[in-house]
Image 1: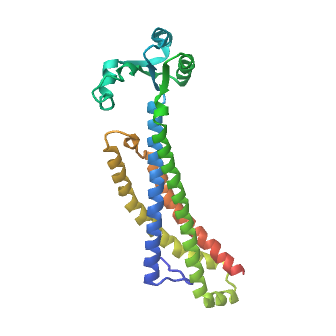
Image 2: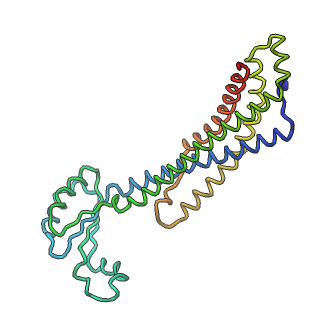
Image 3: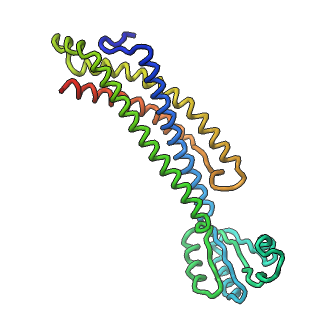
Length: 279
């Protein structure tokens, strides 16, 4: 394979550029992997609780009317679980402190899983007007957890954009320096009639090789780190993070990101060289 005729990198420059691109590629793949795994967790968590709700009937509430509403909607209900007052008292025992002062305020609760969203909304509208009766969806109770998930995703996307921007800046700066170092050779090539595209292609070949090595190393290191993070999250007993996962399509997207970093580096080098040559 022929080596570039115009531009050349010394060993220290090659190692520095490969290490820099490996680090930035690692961060980019890690951020995108976290975005996809957290997106999967938020989606699964939301779907898991989106169709579930609890009907709470306080003492003195219209329990008979609530039961009639639930019976009428039986065709749209996947499952029903009644929680007795005694069970609620056992769950609230740490707050009751062994006394009976608050026992008269413990509601009768019924957990309902609906088959579709319209059925949930319809029952919510019917029960909301009843006195001493509350209709609480699980999605409302889990809203804080889901919000945290979306914040992590947003932060990861922001870091990913910063990393990609850093790649562009670094490649542009290195390309500019290499071009200025070889300014004398460029002047000679221009005098003998070499086109700008020929000169730019020489540097693109060098950048392509180095960026391919850096992106490959970054991806190889980031992949097992993502697997470890996901395994740790799935090892938790409860919580949204137990739903973290990257599907096969997600791994293909991560591979595409590594290839995209190579293409971005080559394109940045080309644009930088052409801009310098035209000035």
